[in-house]
Image (cartoon, rainbow, N blue to C red; front, side, top):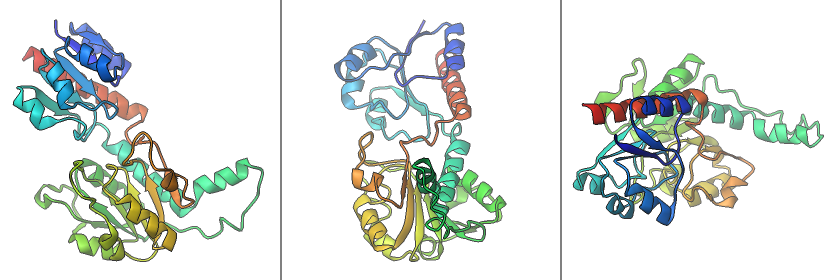
Length: 303
């Protein structure tokens, strides 16, 4: 039976389902030379965000037939090179949409009410009510969503239901946007009119930042920025300058250019809520990801 390397792990129930279907599975994580050795022995490789499937990995995979990314983006896989070698590439785009959308909302609340800083203050024995007495309500605020795939759509639904004015902002494929009752706007309009901007677009390593100095200059003073998509979608140098000048009121960042060692000046900035790329890390999402990965592999090998 096919052997599968689940290099970034998988939900335990999904692992059992694969075993029950006759697959031989390896759930250990390998890096460097060990990964090259192990991938040579398998017919399928599954990854999350930790493993980079480079040309070297693909060249070492003598028997590999399919790579599955448990998640939305596939930018950590050299898709074109894999497909040129006859290796199929799949992902699980629907599984984590709700989890990431809810995290984006959570970051908005955290910034608008200074929840992390207020909590840290209380933990240190202080009762600093005055410092945290100038919060901001989300109801009535204009939310610009850049990228209206599954995650952006879920965020729009949730934000609209709690009273935010949602600009259904920029998307490369507006004809595919499924949410009704929201506006489609030009990107510059989203920059100019939004109180809060949340980005949900992919980014290849070779692409420039979607939001850099020019785009930040078009935004309202005191805008809040949320990035749960990919590190580098927002230019980190430009963001730091905008935070220091007050142009950006606060930023919620779950993704970073230098993962897993992001730049400390942004992580430690007092108006940044910093998270270690946990957008999809809920029990529910992990279960759905595992189920989707298992179904993809069973369909691929048993068709």
